Length: 84
Figure 1 (cartoon, rainbow, N blue to C red):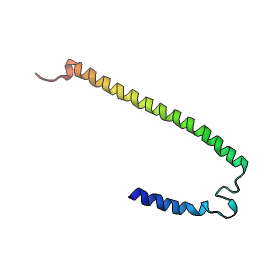
Figure 2: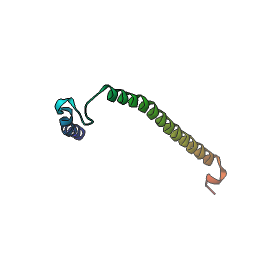
Figure 3: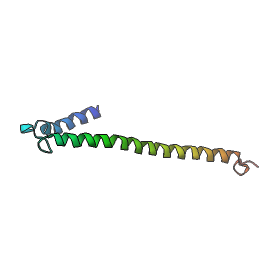
Figure 4: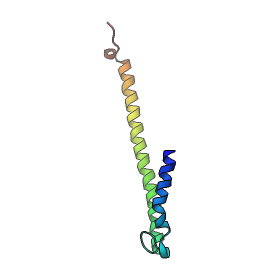
């Protein structure tokens, strides 16, 4: 419910920019060059984002497996078994 209300308020705040006079938005008149650069930015952004997210996931998986291996080594070590 809260996210729906937040979305609605956000849309109300952004609506005046969408209804700008004369077809000009926040960055001025929309030209072919503007559209081309925006598209190029998207083409560059998504592969970079996917690559960075993949590197982050690989690093986190590597840490997880190292933690599991360390726990397994502790369980097999006589020093950590406890007892008398």
